[in-house]
Image (tube, rainbow, N blue to C red):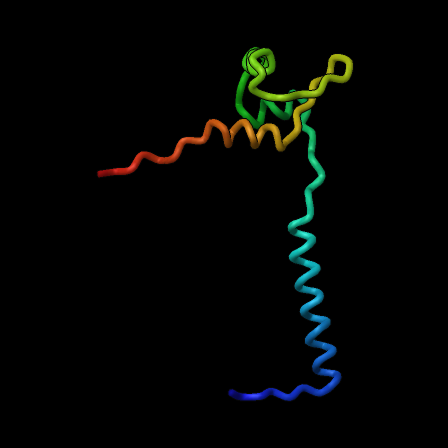
Length: 93
């Protein structure tokens, strides 16, 4: 087994770099603040009509918030909707 000897300054620099890496990893794993899309953004993102969005809300396919006449969707709910309807590629035999 080979031993590596570091000076006090080298050790401190190494620990500092490891802390920086750990902080970057932790910040990426931190829960993201949920983004809301208004109805128009949702329609454009999904490439659907207003009537289709209304049907999906009525059927409970997508959760939404309504403030007055304005409708909002959580981006995480949109991703969840897409994930629930995800189909893997058919395998070739």
